[in-house]
Amino acid sequence: MTTTVIVAATTFPALAAEKWDMPMAYSGSNFHSVTGAEFANCVTTGTGGDITISTHPGGSLFAGADIKRAIQTGQVPIGERLLSGHQNESAIFGWDSIPFLVSSFDEHAKLYEVAKPAVEEVLAEQNLTLLYSVPWPPQGLYFRNEVKTMDDMKGVKFRSYNNATSRLAELTGMLPVTIEAAEISQAFATGVADSMVSSGATGYDRKVWESLNYFYSVDAWLPRNYVMVNSEVWAGVSEASKNVIQACAQMAEYAGTWRAKEYTGFTLAGLAAGGMTVEPANDALMAGLKEVGATMTTEWLEAAGEAGVGIVEAFKAQ
Ligand code: PCA
Image (cartoon, rainbow, N blue to C red; front, side, top):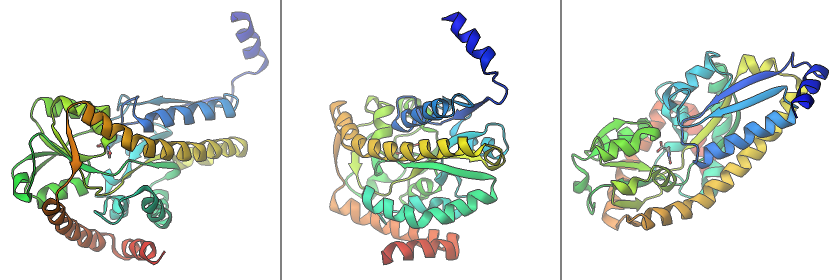
């Protein structure tokens, strides 16, 4: 075995070979991370080792909030990030967190189709090239205690992951604190937070039933993760390798989206098996949340301006 490796190394000197570290924010078992690992293998194999990608899930190389900057500045060539976490840089990144505009994967896919060019334009200005993007399952509300009315939310400590989630908390009288998914089990266990809005997938991955007791499906929105490469690095990649990477990216987007759909029911069942009450929000709660959602939508359209209005109008015109 050792002899084979030495012979191979002598025959094909690894002069052009590059090693790409790929930071990812979510746990290794999460479907985004599993998809990313497959993508990395696909590129490594497909380029014959010219480009070897190693994923680093769970925020182990960079915390979620730092991944985008790390790619932009070339600290790493590639990485994955929940772009709506950067709405403060560009409101356009928040297109996927507009409350109650879409509630299913199919509607969300249509919205993504019209939003994608505007997102890619902002990314290009930031030295970033999009390779693929995968949605999270629909977002629901988690609580430690039962919530029947909007008033029950007042004063509750709420874990947020982007501007939209923080705003949702403010408008419902909750107290938002931003915490990475990798840290939430501890935050709930220690009482730093008692609620959040997220997918069944994240609650399942982080075993939140150990602390929280209620999940209300409200299908508020479906945010996306994006795998992006530094544009200068990308410009230096050979045509042959670019073709391989793009093909692997397409497969990853397909496989990741498929997994997100499969994982939706599976993880909600997992939360229930863990002891949580998993049910739709009641009508009163839903009506209150929709009012909050309308306010957030107006605010987002104002912040995102013409490009944002264009996305929503193009979606509704479909
Ligand atoms: N999980 C991620 C983002 C959206 C989701 O479903 C999180 O809670 O951080």
